[in-house]
Amino acid sequence: MSTTANNCDFSPMKKIIKEDIQQMIENLGALIEILDQDGDCLLGDFEKVKKNFQHIESSAATFYLNCYLSPYIERYTDLSLSIRSLSDRRHGALIAVERSDPLDSLLQPGIPIGAPITHSLLESIFYPGSPLHDGAVHIKANQIVSAKNILPLTGAQGNDRITGTRHRAAVGLSELSDAIVLVVSEETGKASFASKGQLYSVISP
Image 1 (cartoon, rainbow, N blue to C red):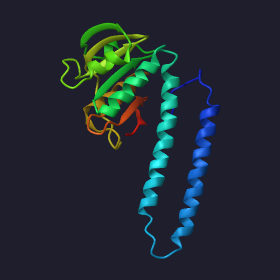
Image 2: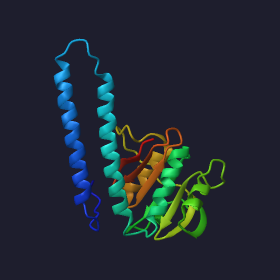
Image 3: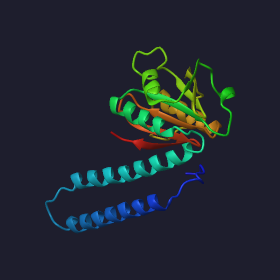
Image 4: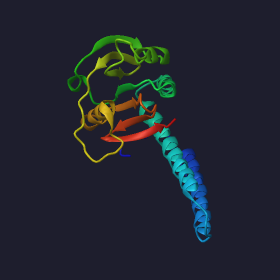
């Protein structure tokens, strides 16, 4: 990840990741030994290894996300709570967090909100059937600036994580600015964030 997060202490997360990777290496070593035995099907074990790796990736991405948001949003924990709740309920969402680069010229403006960030307000905006749930919420500092904004779509090809309009919009805006764009898939409940044209999973139900 190229986005800077200078205000964070990476030592605890690095320690956890190292321990998790070491455990995964030990598990893979055990699988190598089992391969010498006839008749054992390892497909279930491979699935466990894949899920363990996805968990490591998701935990690291969540840590980095909080580092990227905390210098710009005091109430980033409300944002995190909202994303988790929306993910659990499989309510689709798209949230653009403005950082150093102004976003006004990159958005097709939606409906002004002008309210402080709260997880209850964000969840109500993206509640299915809400008149504001289509499009993106624009957050700047500690304010929900507007909702129902249209973001530029990416033209990137070959990334299997970029599926659906919300994800293409998240990546598209992050290609043109230093914004952090959070997205929740209504099909799977999977939550991700886009930064510098890349998409990273933070919650996988």
